[in-house]
Length: 401
Image (cartoon, rainbow, N blue to C red; front, side):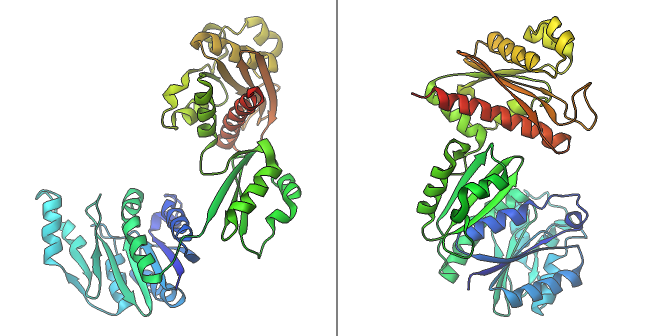
């Protein structure tokens, strides 16, 4: 009863013009709620192909969730495809037409009336943040839910769909613990954890990697005990045992200390500051930052001696140490982070792509670290920013009484 299949609809997904955020949102939500997601598929804007996919998935799962194709444009074909899959007529709903008129204050174009069409066997699902209502209907033994493709509308409609689904299936959320790890290679983590990562037993343990951060997810009976053992084995390399980001962990640690931080960025180009301000309440601890991309501004804004740049270049331990110290002084912060390196794809003087330095300046001086990060330009920048956050996190841990 808990088998769930997901189908996202749109040519833009198949062509790579739009990232399929809905599939990830739905998969995680249904998995956490106690479902077993057996398939995640995408299909283009074609009535026959959509209908065929719905029939096939409805035969394999007890629940099918679709997103996309419920708007007013000619390529919004989900309503017609569902009618075909259910072998019923597509009808106009006068009450829904009136509701759309009220929602748009009488300014809905005639084409919006398409959104008041539904398969004869379907019922409406309320959309609290958009004009396109969702649909629910039975196809064979499966219940099919169709939601709009706009991610914020999916997020707004999902709680009510999950409530109905749980009531129908008697599914119950599985225990889940998530541990976030940085500063460890994936292969080394496997060696360190050994049997704690055993597959095919309860609780289930999975490992994923993104931008240098490893996520270990533990699901099922005994999740708390297994997660505690994994955290103990990883020590300070584990920075969170919930969904807190690395920046959120650092902000909390600074808040506890009543300390502030500033940033001086070259290679990361503002990304490090952005990670801080993504955290709600970061203004309590984040003083500000300077993006000194050109060497002249490393001197004029961060007081990096020109002699250091001339002798060692901007991609050097001496330069990044001076940048961090300069930012700390400029902002009057307790701590400051700095980044400098070659983001690629071309070298920066003698510095190869992906190489550079980070620094953390604090009340007891500055610590530095050389980095050699693989990846494209965007990934290198993100990895440097995360490494700088981790440098500060470990400094704060070392200073904790």
